[in-house]
Length: 146
Ligand SMILES: [Zn+2]
Ligand SMILES: [Zn+2]
Image (cartoon, rainbow, N blue to C red; front, side, top):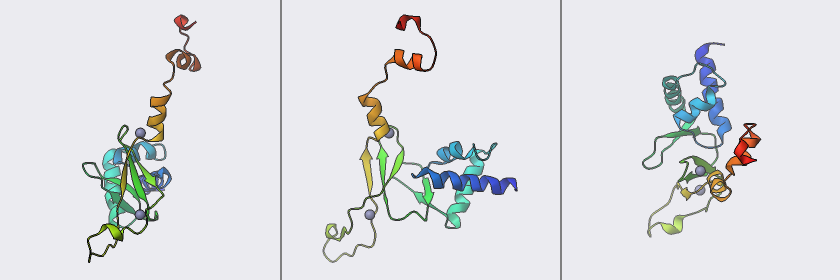
């Protein structure tokens, strides 16, 4: 298979399986295992092409770099973790928000982003791993740990 085609497929694959919108750097990290030698410039070029041809949608949060997700993903919302800055998909919707609009206005669509702390970051805060146990689990002997 041609190198460029393989790289584009790897980029699409990385975004399809992610189940959350990815930054170009995250796309690169994921796609590199499928297409060794892939570089960030190629990722940017392909992301642009895939947005232009209608395969990918841009997720633009205020003050954030653009993230990318498949256009085919059905109506959903996003959650941004304030600690790790990752953005996750939220598959719940408050439904018709017409009541929030001023009288006489007609609502055609909505976009909703929740902010908070993701399960990974909440878990890290709640149950810090004891340093000694961690060292033993990885097979590095620390005499002082007994
Ligand atoms: Zn997080
Ligand atoms: Zn919705």
